[in-house]
Length: 124
Length: 411
Image (cartoon, rainbow over all chains, first blue to last red; front, side, top):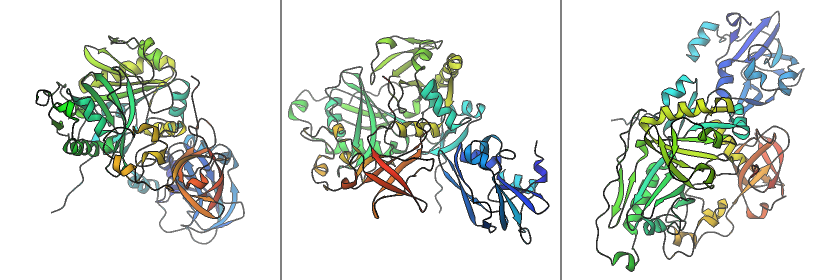
């Protein structure tokens, strides 16, 4: 069970788990629930550079299209192929098997990342 | 002074949906369940077993009186006067321009009685259309030469129970010989859809069919009965592409019927279903949705609904407009693609480098496993088999024009 209080969040409903300079990124259960059943995920390629706040992928449900914003600046070091093959992992395990990409962080983390309490306030 | 929009209405079944953990969405001025658990699971349940939908947001109008049939022939696109009692018929409300105000199902409930069910968001538009039709109607001389009779008395309707939000005044229109009443607030509408629907309704405790037996009831026909002594209207119609029923029940008994049907269907795979599944089901079945495939800017022939209009009627609302429509107006087609990226409403459709149309509804088809869409395209690009492409947020996705519906159940 992922400790949700150990994660950082963005106002675009991504979560970030930081280990050293590697950030694992996914979307929150709140976002997955709002989207409905996810049926297609497009992620940036490994080794691609991403900039905090820029659109770097898409998450489609039967009903709608959500954009994936890079929560931090860096280089994509790994993409979750399992979630590309089975997008329903985003709904089933948003904080575990439904992770999306891993980014090697470059520079400072954005100042506007939220802790769990602040994110819960945002989605209350 | 500021005007605040009216808050969305809730259904008489709202507390049932909350207890079932539904997510809600605003639709047509109503706050309705969009899904209970998973819209894909709900979609598949309807194709494989059965689903239960609250469609109480839809509007119901009663038209009664000795000239009711003749009035509907004028007010609607089809010929309703030749319907047999017990039958249902798909029809259209047209504007004078010939554009579509709404699509409706008409049930003939008596020699001088009809029920018209319209979309929630078009309730006021349909009521207004009936008023306009009443004002412009010139009954044929043989219909008006009889003894002058006042509009028939209001039909008795049960008191509305449950739900919240503004309610509408019941009387819509009426003059010599007929009366139109909006009875939406007095009834809940529940759709039971899927191959198990017949077995579930037959075994729902408290449901007694007093009219045509369910086994004898044809598609696009209705019967009646009771549920716990309340009048129950049972129509074999739907909006999913599956067999099934639409049940109209006084609001006071709606929750009990919902509970009884869910319990009766529990071991047959019945699940409650929200609007998300309803939308993908109707899309696969090639059924139009007002605001997407139908609007006042679309005439019936463009949407493939020319057959719904009885053009040889002497007079009807929209007749003059229809005769002067453009010949090269875009027409509704089905599009299928490979992969998993779906075109969505508003995306451009291209033929080579030329933009030839726009998608009105699109999704990854849960049943078929590939993207499907409905789109209006130029007639020159509308032939079945034409290779087109969809601009999916900057990426061209190949798409082939195909016949509607995308999905057809085994009869």
